[in-house]
Image 1 (tube, rainbow, N blue to C red):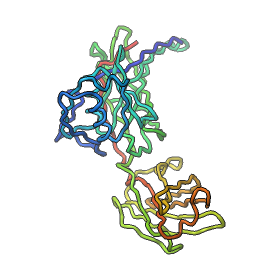
Image 2: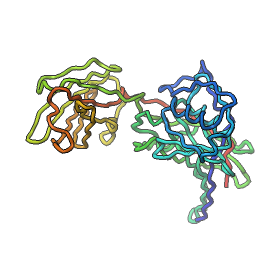
Image 3: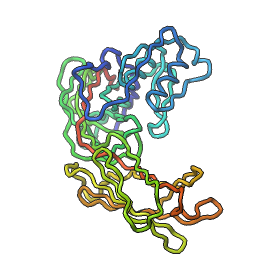
Image 4: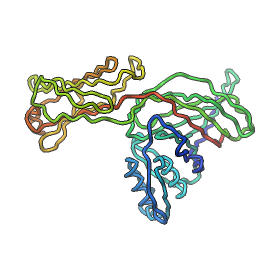
Length: 356
């Protein structure tokens, strides 16, 4: 088998990234950026972007912070503002820590081809040309990175996006077989592969490729805080948040282990999940002592039945760490759970991708 590989890290024209203020609609709205920092520098603008976007941004080196840079954004999506800033300073966007952190690095000879839609960003990373000697056939694989604002709990997405149209640099149509596999991401970035067919040897680039992928995600995590844990088996009901009702059904001690059982009731209309899929992977419980010290645990069981979630968490007493009697006055229980999940499609369009 002959293998040709071309890394693709490309910078898009900023005009193509700017969504129409009144026309673009998103199932989940992006974080937006508003600032007026003309004749400023990269350090100040990166700090402002990090604060408004809620994502840490590292610079190439200390000297780059003083690099001249302008930023005038009026309620623009975070990814647009970041790409604009990277473009005018000759940097590229590098994701770290599973997409939870960002670094700006000198672009050098690299390319960056990307597409932004709301809180999602698609980047072309690699084009691989394959020739199968046993069958005499050849095809290309376009490797993509799909990533999103890490504040969003994303539960599943397509492993291979659906391609609506694609053409090479000579205007010839390209095709991509439709696949229906889905994956559950473990970070805020997920690889995806598109198998491209019909690329001729004299083609130099994929001039344009447009498609979409399906995502199941929530808009945010909800924090349910129970301030009174002294009622034992008497249920404590909180006001609903985003149409999600929460009940602390019981607080009970079994020898040296404390058990907390919570029940959440979601709206009836939720996306359908397979038995091996879950939308409670981001759920977390923490005890907070009267002095404000948090305690967490991984000993838990979560059951989902329709629109109802029942969770049981166990905490072991530990006098040395300060976890003594959480059912006494002053202790709090905080349970983080996603807002009602939604299923929607995210479109993307990539242009001018070099071919090996």
